[in-house]
Image (cartoon, rainbow, N blue to C red; front, side, top):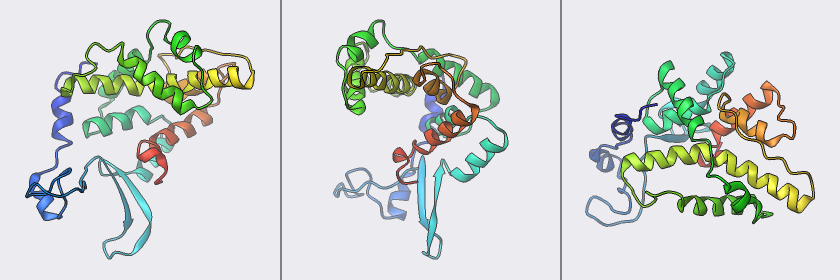
Length: 237
């Protein structure tokens, strides 16, 4: 997938008009209009509504780029398809991808779903942890040493880094868990490579299971869970 012009699309669909901060009386980052104050407030990426227009409490509405999560999930279920990659594209670039853009994006993520040679053995298996989150944190710090542009905060580079992390997080989580199971639970060690033809949800289950087997229902449920976890770890939902 060619990322040319994607940066412009991402910037365009993520900007908040300056007049909105005055209209809604929200401080901009750590400053208000006069350069004082500490309160952040506006986003057009995701929103959670707990009140209706009359300020009555409602069960709650989650939106991604103004799309209701219930509508998103209903559409995925009715068409019996996966949606994590599509929602990733939506959150990053501010609009739903065309069929061609989605296919290219899926291929791009699959190509980035890899770790440096010997990384699993030398970083994860050599220093296993009973805390998977701790192991993943150390993996991220270690990966920075492989990135020649780790300190480059240009939009183009940050986008590349973000895509790499989105692709690699499932590997770091599963391999860290496998190391924990092996070294702390004294169970057999299984390290499976991801399949570029599979979705993120499918790959997680494939790498997790000793025999790589999983049902379509399991993968679809996990796919929806991953989509919900895009917003604050799903806890709000």
